[in-house]
Image 1: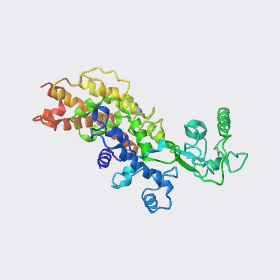
Image 2: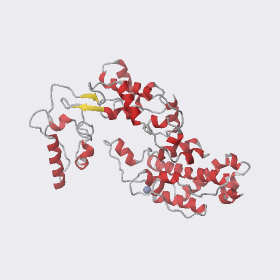
Image 3: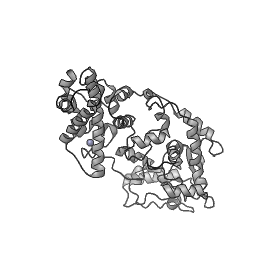
Image 4: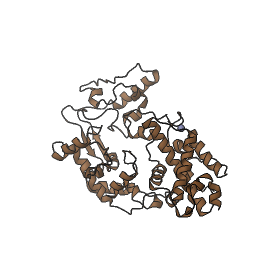
Amino acid sequence: MQRDFLWSGAGEGKKDHLIRWDVVSRPKELGGLGFGKTSMRNIALLGKWLWRFPRERNGLWHKVIASIYGTHPNGWDANMVVRWSHRCPWKAIAQVFQDFSPFVRLVVGNGERIRFWEDLWRGNQTLCSQFADLYRVTSVKNLSVSDVLGNSYPLSWNFNFRRNLTDSEIELIQSLMLSLSSVRLSPSSADSRVWSLSSSGLFSVRSFFLALSKVSNPILFLPAKFLWSSKAPSKVKALAWVVAHGKVNTNDKLQLRRPYKSLCPQWCILCKGNGESIDHLFLHCPVTIGLWHKLFNLAGLAWVPPRSFVDMLVIAFKGLGNSLRGKTLWQIACLTLVWMVWQERNNRIFEEKGRTEEILWDLILFYSSLWASCTKAFRGVPLSVLQLNWTAVCAS
Ligand SMILES: [Zn+2]
């Protein structure tokens, strides 16, 4: 229930489970939301349903889940994109998928249910990431292993490239063919999935639970103080929290999460160039950095942009002074800037509407003033006065 509440509140239409639940449940200084420890055993139990789903294809429950959510592009699982408005147990189960899937291994039988490029079926990497240059020039991305290799020997190698290969690509394909030369498909047995944490290949709650416990290795989350002492609205703090964890869905992240979709990781919609990483979008993008400069100018400070977005939240800038008002407003303004950049980025992508840097800056001034004026520190200060002169109000 906590989890439903959290992700339906903080997710602004985002569909991925952005931050692992074991991180979320940590104390704030360790990067979580301070809910207190929830049972990892519960997560492990939910994993059981993920394990059973592809194995019980004739079960009524399988059919119900598949008809509501559809099938995952990998052809085994249910679609894990669960809309925030849905209130049902499957949502909690789907959120375990990210923790669950790394422990599942595919075993090739006839090669019909395993995707040649996108699935992890050989070694520790998918072939599409190992041979990205080749994957880029294939015309059909989701071929199965048997589509590519054929059912008989010698292997038939139907790659379906959409153009002739260059010399360097030919070298790549040779090394790919060499690495797969020992693969033997067995037409009489179906492909299967095994659980890598047990010798039997079968899922056990206990093994999953132990693996989850090992994974949770809390380290200090430095931006916590700045973030949680701020008086900005929760939605603004929540966004900054997700960004500081490096988990917001910028294009470079989406590309990693969904390698089968071709996005444009090189493209930042704000400056129409460079890669859209978190550090770029919220700090180094020419548009964003212009806004940061305006903020520091307003405070009368010279500013050298730090290396990363997290540094930005950790470094104690002097800001608007050490008065309660100065600190309150400075924290709110920084977080509002982050929030506004994200709004703008999404507006441009999804609504195809762009605003100028001047308008963005005015909005940052307006919202920061509005939210600050609702705090105790600014009680009795009219919004119109605050909005016009931050430094004077913070000094008084
Ligand atoms: Zn940019």
